Image (cartoon, rainbow, N blue to C red; front, side, top):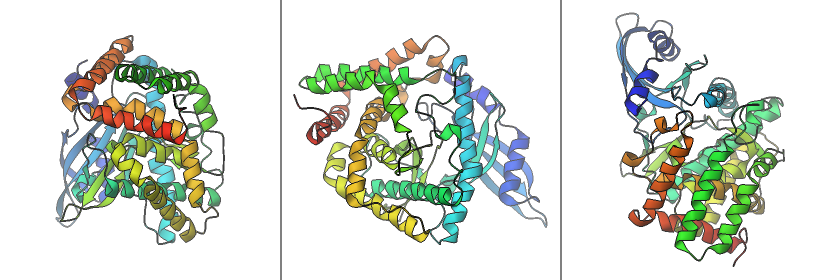
Length: 421
């Protein structure tokens, strides 16, 4: 199926009954659906593991009241890669459980401590029938939230808001765990990255391919021989790295797991200053070190000229907000400055991996994004070759790629993660 055909199939999963149930959950049992229509708002390349669209509704209330409301819907992507059906289902199960189970409990704890709810949308409906999964969420655009241009890289103000949102999530998960010790023990939250379901297709080859592309980029640029050796060693140890990642330590929290700027919306004041953030897309959430999210965010969503000179201040922003939430909630853990820096550095390999993985996705022109239908069963080789081709072409055509890519390796050489030549 091409992109338009696949979108039409995904639309067929959105039923009137689902919209009615979401409306009643939002507006009360007396709300009557008058009309509804699907309105797409995302572009090719914005989403890969789900179709994201919206519905606009008109409704009536008892006593003659009327209103309009829109919802964002995440639906099964309806791709033809049958071998990934179990992974897709697990992803939806994990996100639905987060919104309908974990999020309400964490919000109740935070509200009781006057901290305020987590920076996330409300979920009004979910259906987890295999191959027909959908989740219906609050449409944050109606509250003024909007997406930041992923190709620009977050500035300090945006990054601090994102870090505060992550700190609140991390701290809230620990407070929940202290009150309900078994709350984060679900298998889906404690499996290594790339192994969502026992017996399912292992997606580590996806990372291996993107690391190969990074080796090619470094080879073309030249002068990064030690980095090439390091990347090859990381590729050979990917499974070990992710298996070690889920071994419990005192720093383990419920992480977002996919904390890059395309999974965040920002709200702005009248003078265009960012004043609030919302975290989206919890399909990759997992229980690992808090430093995973910090590395993921800082090495996928910031340019080197913003990240490096402001790193200490950014980490301190995270630490201060995490400790404030823990103190308000009566939690046991407090993070020291050296602890945060040390744990962040200990997880830099995670930042490097996902920095390499996302560089092409972050900087590619949306019109040039590889369509999901290229990933039909048996055609992954073609899809990856197309991604590699477009990424390598950006070395010559996109002035943003080279400095953003190399800044990451320069920092890791300077910190000692990558041996100097």
